[in-house]
Length: 321
Image (cartoon, rainbow, N blue to C red; front, side, top):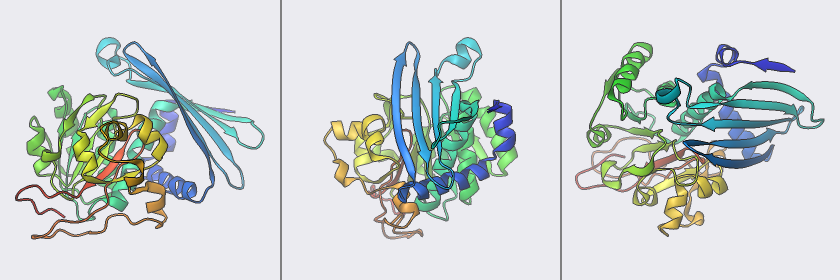
């Protein structure tokens, strides 16, 4: 059995390698070559614990179970990471324990990689601008992931702690070679963005339907538990929605709020991302900008923690497709 620390994981697994692996995992899921997934959540004061398990079936089959502790105030109160935990990897045919590894690093890379895969298939291929809301570890990886698959030239990063946003802006501009600005006005940033990635622990929606132009790709990362919410339900309902696992999204993702408000049904979800990756369902139907029309793009949403959406509604004066 191997034991991998956070440093080991980050040394062995790059973001680009993770993007390739996650896309392959979605493809295998569509082909029925996966186990699970299963989810368990246990709330605790100031945060909670999440157990997520799944597996891959192949020449050698694997089972993995991730246990994460998620406490958003850790950095401020104790100087500790928000997410801590372990991933246990086992042989799915014999049960032999193969490895135990740090989960915070795996979670951060996998979450960013899933957004990158979604953006590859669902965002406009010429998308050049992005807004990231939430400037912790995940926000930084999300921006890097988007920049890995789209020709970004400019980004805005926002956080309730503006100093943290300024820090991320400086690092990202140096590392990615694009213009990155620490913003304070979310609506203004969104008005100039082709991509929006909120990744916060919010329990109240802060991205509304009127904030987002038609054709925008949204990857909602923060909602990974009952009650968490970043998007106004009418925004989700007016977009084309793609999920990674429908049942999980309906229970603990942004979709929970839309279903509760009876603004759409599960049957109205456009697709699971695995079906888009394999071509069973179409992704973005319009791939270029048009000065006079609005794309009928699939609404996208994904996973308990990320939903990918291309807004199909054209607000007054908007012509983004």
